[in-house]
Image (cartoon, rainbow, N blue to C red; front, side, top):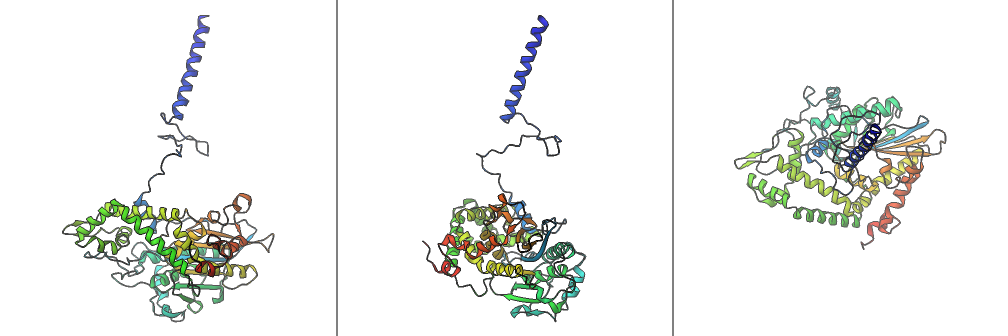
Amino acid sequence: MLFRNRFLFLLALAALLAFLSLSLQFLHLIPVNPVREDGLNPKSRKRIMPDLLTEPPAIDPVYEAQVYCNTPTIAERSMEGHAPHYFKLVSVQVLIRHGDRYPLYAIPKTKRPDIDCMLVPSRKPSHPQLEAFIKHMSKGSAAQMDGSLSSLPHFPSHSLCEMGELTQTGVVQHLRNGQLLQEIYINKHKLLPGDWTAKQLYLESTGKSRTLQSALALLYTFLPDFDWKKINMRHQWSTIFCSGSCDCPMRNHYLEEEQRRQYSLRVKNNDLEKIYVDMARIVGIPTRQLRASNPIDSLLCYFCHNVSFPCTKAGCINMEHFKVIKRHQLKDERERQEKKLYFLYALLATHPLLNQTVNRLQRIAEGKKEEVFVLYSAHDVTLSPVLSALGITEARFPRFAARLVFELWQDGKRPKEHFIRILYNGADVTFQTSFCKDHYKRSSKPMCPLEKFVNFVKRDMFLIFNSTSYYDACHRRAL
């Protein structure tokens, strides 16, 4: 009897201890080890359980700056060209931001960052085809370049970079982009034959040397054979690629409202103001003048190229200054999405470019064989509104050499059906778009029907303006 009572007592005690252990784990007082998908139980210091009532983790401004720099280091993995085996790739349209560049602004009374824009294959970062690229770019007389593009150099060549000039890093970034896309679209999917013609390409660049040179670097490693006689680069005078449809008063209205929002957020940030005052003291200029010089643009160049921030007799600009300004920039990007003013601007700013894209995709879906590969070489102010207009809110601000890709696929089982995939820096963002989010829940195919994209551009983009056309949305007064 005594043994039985002792056994029951120990059993009850064990049950109590088990209950207490589970309770403490649930209350986060005892760490537990999460079980991985492969069934292993790795060591862990804390229980991973998101608390929906707490603020999201703070964004690391240094890490975000490193992502923005996009310094070529390791081979990039991408999702471009992935589709069921019975699908055929029939068209690819690519919108890129130029590669790494020298600043557009200088911090007054400081020495400019010492960056060499001569291309030297033995200097890092480099690329196996950089030397051949340099030799080939010096023979570009047979190319057709519209307007002012014909007078621009085909590659950077200054021992001290000029303002806004593409750097060797920027060239290498796009040599890598072109090589990656060639492996997928040329070698695997045979988008272009070895004897491709000029009619199979559509190439367009703004009138800046950094965008033209970025396009040439990508094309050099992408095309099966880079033949200058087949290169016809069109000049786009507008950074938003609005071509002949740039008259849009309401687009300008929303941009002005967005700029006022930015200003309001900036003047409310006491930490930012203190940093500007301190930096202005260091360089010996009024705070207003420092702010107008857009110091983050210059500081990012120092940061991306691992060059020490500038110093004067009064002190040095340091990483803390950089972090506060970059942190504010990231906060501004978050608020920009919340307030929607930029979104309204983006819809009107990008419609001409998206409409051109849709029209081309429709022609190819109908059987046209021209312009199956398209390259637009542009700026951050081009890519950013396109991402916003498409509803891809999770995308980071366009890094150097960012790429946005539109793939058109034909269903081999139903040849009349066509689908699109949209990829940003190699990540499939098709179902992040506003027009295809719901389709993902009902579809067994990893793509979006082309007609959904067509309807979005031709009709749905204007609904928020209570309009039925681009012209009407551009000229209807804001409520």
